[in-house]
Length: 410
Image (tube, rainbow, N blue to C red; front, side, top):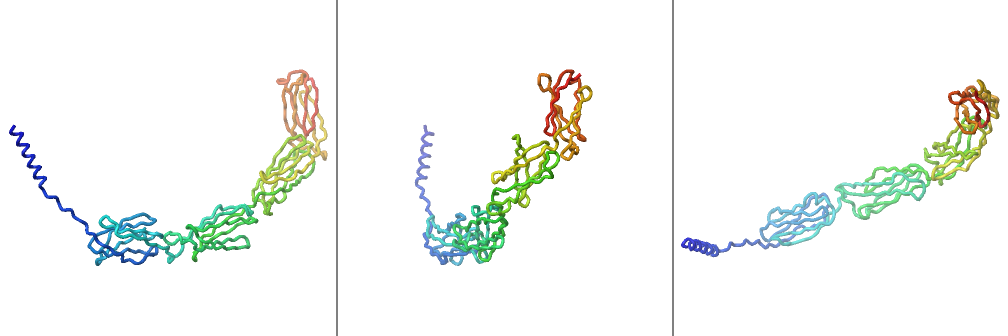
């Protein structure tokens, strides 16, 4: 019990002593007054500067400095009773409005703003952009030419700064004075009606931009004319016929771009279609095809896909072979066709296609044999292994002439 009372007594004494201790004195900041000594409100980008103040008491305030770069907290340098705040390099190189606040004793004592102006003393830098770099002839197409004039520290020059845009095409040259607005100046460079190479540049404060080149390509071609050349008019399957276009031009008379694809579509008198293609060189395109192997009439038309076409031309081919003989050997097991003779009674060139269709007595096609002429003749052999003895119908076709023979194979 005595131990319990002793503990209570010690606790009471400790509480008494703790409560009787005098509180520590709170240190108070000095409430100073400040005067701005820096009278300038306009500065030049890239030139160091500082803000100076005079304080009524010896204190160490801070300066909050803010512009487009960001916000920073500056400490003062004490020089002969003057407070001096040096603005950092990355802040004084940026043009525009700056704001400052002088903070002391956790209170804003003074505030203000200043202006950092573009530095034109050390020259002008001009950046230019042009696109697209290729145009189609005619007033509807254009490129955008954008110019940005800056100082050494990449600050855009003030609005309404004069920038000269220059355009040269063939024998003409033009200039236009533009005024910068919202950091840049721009203009539309419209395509002329002639194809060729256009040069574009800009200038500002005796600084010239690099040279830009824009290629003016011809517009879409307009309808054109085609013609053909051949050595003779006979369908010998050997000679070449050449199709050609006249000079293909666009609406403004420009010659079509080199390499423009031209398709020649040929339709014969049986409705079959052939196709030949060529690309333009100096505005003209040509394509070649072999003569047909038999009498035919062609209708030829040319196209530049999606743009232009020609009027159709009609070409007539006369038959070069009007008839031929057939001979059977070995109990009709061997068939000799020819000799085939052409329009001057000469042997047809080697390679004339020949076909033999073999049918049974019921008219069912058993096989189609093919060969080509050699020295004006063709040869077919009907093997007993494939064609056993019996009656057959043979259909022979070459040079567009079909002959039918009924034979009995043994």
